[in-house]
Image (cartoon, rainbow, N blue to C red; front, side, top):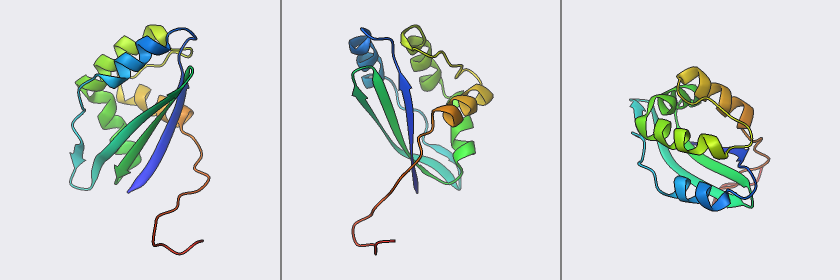
Length: 118
């Protein structure tokens, strides 16, 4: 399993509306294929900064393309669009992939209890 984080911002003053949208949408189908699935997702906000953390088992590109096709994701994205500082197109797998690649945060470290330090 790998953990990924995406960073994006909403327009200042829209934080409450955005928190409501992101806190109340249907889950996407987590199973992509026999090797890839969405294990979990979390969303954090600080002011107008939003960080979405995804735990994915398997192929990131397959997962991103799958999420771009999911009705739950398309619906939440349509609701979010007017509130985002930088618009994005999540209506196609290509648009979803483009957003994920531009918003992906660099992982600096990841530590798991019981594993030796590297």
